[in-house]
Length: 106
Image 1 (spheres, helix red, strand yellow):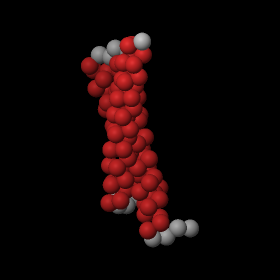
Image 2 (cartoon, helix red, strand yellow):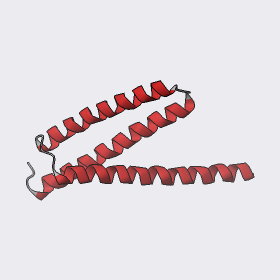
Image 3 (cartoon, one colour):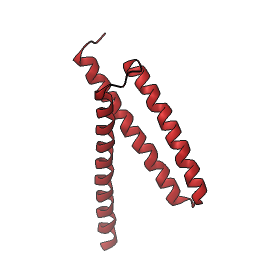
Image 4 (tube, one colour):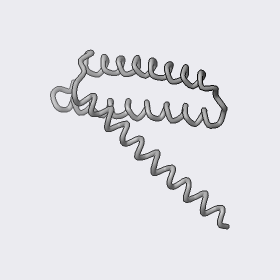
């Protein structure tokens, strides 16, 4: 069993993956909204359900990774995971746009 800094680093990585997963799920929800028209009240309900489920998911992750104690490295890991996922998605979007522009020119 790990102890000390190794366990904290594993929790940090797990928290980063948690943040990345939350962003990926929300971006998927946004894509679904663009593909299928939603009324404003439906969007509000979807957002409320998303945030309630996200809160439960985050609580469970905190509970299992650090015995229910909110550690600074867990919060930092989630923030880093969210930032990395946003950077990845932005870069992928730019590449996709360049590929579309390239194929249109031919």
